Image (cartoon, rainbow, N blue to C red; front, side, top):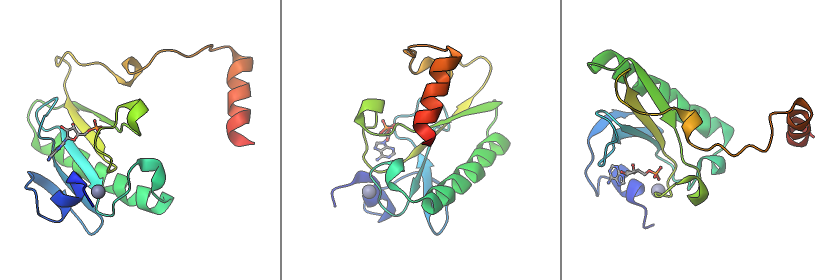
Length: 138
Ligand code: AMP
Ligand code: ZN
């Protein structure tokens, strides 16, 4: 399969590894948005997060938690993290092998929050929110 992250897992492409377990690999992003910008990926190929099973997702986020703590404990000037995933092209995913971004943060880094990603909700009206919640649960 022509997948760059599968090639990293297979050792065919080098990476700056920061964590590995049976199901997961974490390595530094080659084009970092912040010092310590890390990618956490499942070893089993899944193009996008929603194509993983709940169990596989749980293993992935267990590793995200471990790596997050590594970064918080071992990197200087890191007082927070932004953790996120772009899922499918419409959300900005460019590498079609599931990956979680961990961005080390501090008060003076000039970065935004998850609230700055998109801002086009039609309404915050309670009836409208109720309708959406019903749609999602029926
Ligand atoms: P996304 O836009 O969410 O799909 O993120 C893909 C990320 O993968 C980008 O931040 C790239 O810089 C990163 N990336 C692409 N190729 C490599 C590589 N060989 N090693 C590490 N990170 C990579
Ligand atoms: Zn892959």
